[in-house]
Image (cartoon, rainbow, N blue to C red; front, side, top):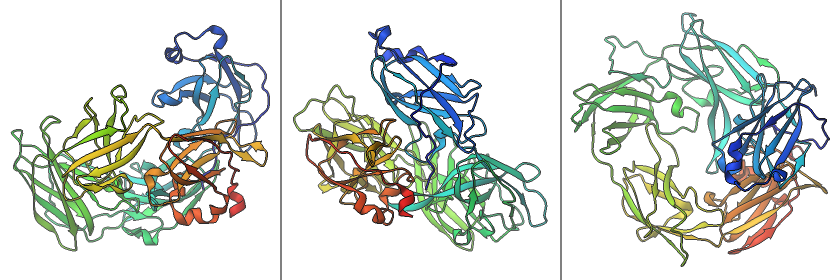
Length: 550
């Protein structure tokens, strides 16, 4: 379970250092009067000692401009800050300081606390308690007890994707010439540790060793080469160093993957990428290998351990993109003679229609997001929807995708998707055998909406994670989540009609709610909700205190 990084307290604060928010906030409200400007102030504390923290940075960002953070203030010697000249609106408010966990790196949906400011509002209790960072250190040696540099050591933790448990790297560091590494800024918790020699390397040319003495394969701590089954967790405590997480890498039998790229463009150059098909054990991008094929198209990857991989060759420009994709099973002997024939990948066309409503002013887009991102794989689109509803996504690589419509207005939802004559379940389109068919998407402006306040008994519960879970648990595109603001208030929009349960947790790992096994002990605490088209419902769920369920 993740720790809640930001804790609001409801105490008043004395006047101290002030900072003026950047004027870019006013751009959204050009007619704002001076008396409508808002002020926020508060304090930042060390969560372990309770002491005030000076030189902590407070960061504001408008909720609808998440990619444009606004640095707003630095705390004074008493840990106090004040920000004036803030336009009314809904903001993410975050605090960070060297030596403490950066709230932006939380796996939780609550990476920044939400604050809603009305005209002329002066809020005096936006307080933070920052968690002192955890640190993991260790050393990497080879079979002769000599230090190994350029070994990437990653911290992995369990997370959830489409209802399945998987491992995801949350931070990493490379060993230096002494074989030493140090990973800092870590949230308290339990982690697996993975060491990969010379990760994600990009070779300028294929290299074949005259004498194959084996290679170094990924090792899970404490000593499990290539197999997660032998991995053990480590515990990282707040404000503490976990030392001695050491690795000894020894050469094992590996093989070579070798072949040729054909149909080369006039430039005669292509990039070849090799990576594992399944990233569920945390390998994923950490063991991806890339190289330029030579001018004759020859490529060779050495030190490859047995397993299932995806090979991809790419060449050309965005205007004339060429690619070839092949899945391969690598055994105990060299895989040679592979041919990757470059060609133009097919595109997908489609239409977006509405139920008699005009959407020409919305600037709609359609995108394909890979369910399991592969080495060198890019997202399909986004493609602009023309005024007649038509769209085209070029160069769609083989794979399974979830269809999304980024920028769809909050009160709209995707009502149906068809690929040719077949209904697309859960918004997932299968192009594993190549893109084919036409997509027909129907959207509706009559989505449901739920707002309310999360309560802990009768009091508001700020920072709670609020989740809407469909009764049909395998429809992951219908799951929605948000974070209650400092008053415990929340809003969920764009809800498709259906039967749901509404949950609110004090602490929960992001996306854990998509796992039926995780949800089972909390079922009775969920509030049943029936949403019909255009419904605007008010629900006040009771907070689930995770510790009570352990």
